[in-house]
Length: 461
Image (cartoon, rainbow, N blue to C red; front, side, top):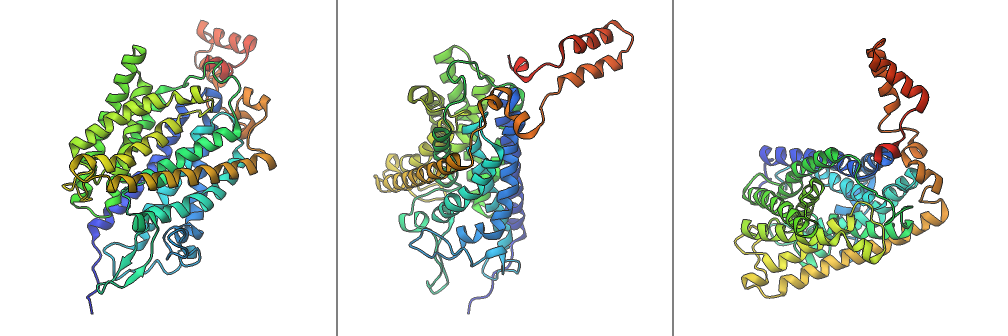
């Protein structure tokens, strides 16, 4: 009889630390997205991320983990929803693991959270917050939890090769490589974002009015937090503090840097300027692309993969103007395209010298791994798009998903949350009080009296 395994405190600490890093990515995404919208939509954009964080946390504990990592109940498509309902039976030590099951529960929870939050960027400026929250609950239940089972749940055997747990079809039957979520997170979110953008329609003034980011400082800060947290996202997926995590960490760093350079070079050649928004967007594109492939490529392969991701995604964000869909913050161009490239690149650039131990086409492995990657990627893309479109259309036609035209023009922060991100009227009054009796104070007071507070639209302009 095999002896029980001992818990490894180093691995446990790494998993829990990585979970905290990934959790930080959702507030980072809120800053990134919040800076990219107009001033009248900042709080609504951030609330969509924070709302997802709150709701998915609860649903994951109630039944989400069980649907994703319960024993398979149907040809690799779904985990048993009742097996771990409420996380029953998971608080005790597992004698067959080197880390607590609850550490894994925590790590996978934050993946579910940020996947939903990513979708929100596609429908910025025009979505009802209440409907968004209902969508989140339905979408994670019908789309994310099952797809997480497909991709992340591996079949387990004991020392006698007897199956003790049956996992999902992409991870086991198809044997596609997706180390940290290129399919389950990024292709999934990108396809869902495209579907919702089509359901809700274009923003008022799309392609006519300037819709520039209102605060690029927030964008850069958010991108930096995403890059920081992504080391937990990718290297944490090794589930141990060892060689695999180390290789993945380096590949994540270098692919991201190369992607930012690739995006900036594309901008410089195409537009004549290298922008801060391009630098931040390139960072995210590189992080997305290296996510599925970080365990299977060499550092040189990661540089190539990242540089091309920066170029491909910089070009792809313009597709919405050619194809006529309004993906507000380029979820499709960055996450769908970047996720597809990174997933397919495993079949091209993978080397057996990397921890995953497979060779892609360019390393003599033929097309065997490439076709597996393609089937997994497009299966997730099609499933997510179709189901999201149906969910979004049902909500749109029943309770309404889009705000009224008047509310959209005045700003969803006011109509949905009765708040504004920048209360410049009180700022002026405060300055007047601080320097009362001076010409500056009198000017501030007169300005407020005669003109009133500046509107968000004026700030944006």
